[in-house]
Length: 95
Image (cartoon, rainbow, N blue to C red; front, side, top):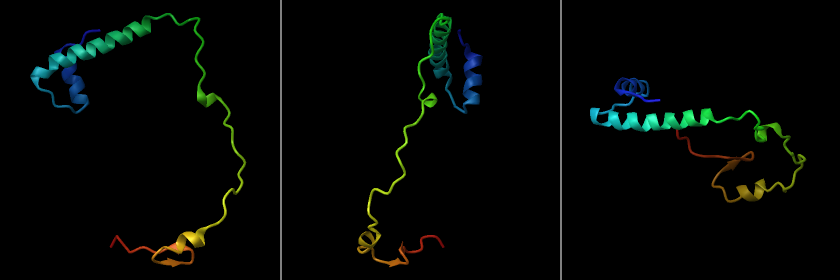
């Protein structure tokens, strides 16, 4: 598929891109090459090809929901400048 000057201008408008007139020919060539590759991929015969496996069709192995660490809140908050009722107190930043 070959794109012309007006096609590139429409695409640039839809993408909200400002293109110089000198860039349009280069973009037309590059996008035409990309669309040519897509046409080649579409032409490939895939009738006897099985789809590859997909991770979304597999069951997730889940671990059991168990506590594996001790509660160390007191030790962690001992070095905090200000704590109240198990919460860190910080200065107000939004007025």
